[in-house]
Image 1 (cartoon, rainbow, N blue to C red):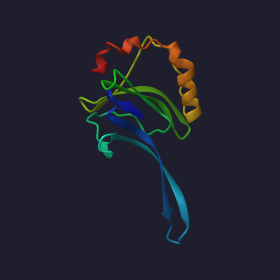
Image 2 (cartoon, rainbow, N blue to C red):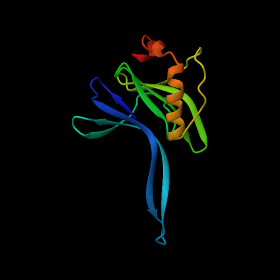
Image 3 (tube, rainbow, N blue to C red):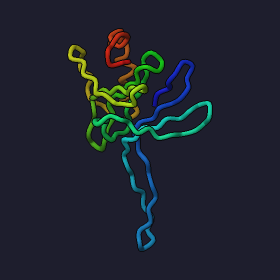
Image 4 (cartoon, rainbow, N blue to C red):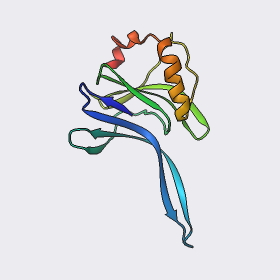
Length: 145
């Protein structure tokens, strides 16, 4: 989830998990967990949700426990990591609100942040590693526009 705009105009939410209660033909109820790869926007002023259908051909895969953040208020929205079942992701994606497209970010000279998932792991990663990285590279990056 990322707050976007200055001041914040909307919230973007990617993926996650939904639990649906299903009833079998013999009346037994069970929970069906589904991991999602959808993108939603919540407009703070109108209190409305809308699903975004990206124009990009390649998008982030289904996942939960990923982290979203913005750089430059609304020009660059980044999605990092997460997990799908036992798979832990270490990928970084950028969503461009102007083109409505995802792009996988490749930073060749950046240190590798190990794949991680789960709310405690993500919170710890941000707390422990945020001061280790120089984010000034994002201030003038060509893929942030």
